[in-house]
View 1 (cartoon, rainbow, N blue to C red):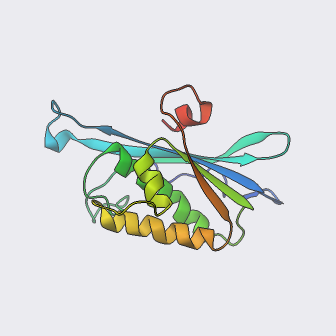
View 2 (view 1 turned 45 degrees about the vertical axis):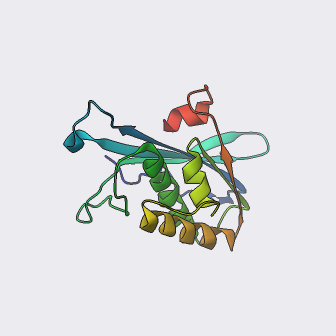
Length: 168
């Protein structure tokens, strides 16, 4: 696994400042009535796309599994496995990394297919589970919004949108 892996630092391409950055995230889970509790797993992926006036290009990506153990390196606060929890983790990993960056893009656009993850990012709903994880995401979101324009967009899953299929 990789946690996380950047192909380049996401706010700079060589000497050029990235003006507009798209962050595509997805979470997935292998859970259900026929999956034993000990076999339940979830994970996430993300892609960072620099959007320019004439072209867009992939400048970073990452993926990891969801860890429920504080002793495990990828642990960032999840209490159970699910696709929305994994997607919250994807957004959190990127938001934290960007929040500590010296130079931020002029605008950030987050894309996700889990509305609960976007609700957490946008402070639209009260957290009823994984409250610590949601609190961490909201803190990172606040730090980003104090320094750049950030918006989120819901995308329908499995509809052929290239960026969403890539992180899926």
